[in-house]
Length: 475
Image (tube, rainbow, N blue to C red):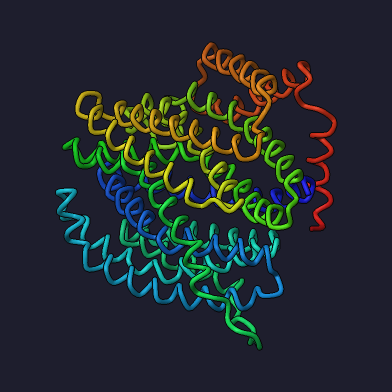
């Protein structure tokens, strides 16, 4: 099962790379094209739309993935029920969102948000059905098909947003978000086959979906509330633009390692349903170790080069974002781990637990932001988010350990932290120019890998898993 997970992860990692690359090319282009003030409007609108969109794309798609992975014979029935429920949800959420655009803009004290918010309401129908189908293929363990749809979405988004924003600026960028999921949906859409037995119960899908929706909405609110409060509490149009840049760079670990969550959720679900607890435990331990191997040096390298990275991606105009970035990247490291742990708990049949933790995290983030932003500005927002994320991670780690009696070896993590710290201090001592980061990052990861080999943290077994994932992709 572990080898199968590595194979599935290889497909989803490839699609994640396309997703991340397209997203950052878009943000770099828009940050430079629109300027800090209008880029800040873009950041707030997309963050708000994304939060509301999760009501449609968080719970129900994950429910589809779970139930399809447990009962593939009824996959078409599950898909049909999900499509019917999603259609109702899209109509209700889309209309309410459109009608409340003026109220939301008033809350931010920025009437320029109104037309952009209204236009973004038309993204819901296309993206919500796209998410149903990618989750359907995820539940079938058709990771290759799921990855293909994600790659098409990423490429369509890149071309449409950049192309349209050249002439239509922010209106064009938002319209690109409508086009991209439509194109991707065409590559994987099919009408559910006619089922002779009773349609899959709507109630079952809803009961599993609701806690997941709550969790994801609050978890995303925790990621976005600092930006919203920067917009509301700092009376500067540019501040929201600077902090949007900070957030977009900080999300690199979360996006890069999302493939593990996508594979772990249906695999853990299937293992628990089949009473294969030992396999589930082994999978959790191996996956968390691999995540920490990649995540820890990545976070410290970005923190060490925050000034150079902001300059390279967004230009010197965005230098006020550098110091907050060096702090917030650590917070998003905690959020990345929390996202993976939450998927483990949800996949094992405990979706309410991550909901409660995300609620606590969102509350703490808002509370800390309210205290720190007026005093410390963007740095206060980054500190607030990092503190809340760290607390949420610790709570989830304790709960996963309590349920599965496994996490990761302290000895292993100590070696990873040691190697990452050495690379961090070497990078700070070099003090590279922005352009040299392109060569510096691969060099530092090479040094990091050599250190881990010397302390016997990376083994031949790890290399065999990697070889199987890359060269033997038969699922």
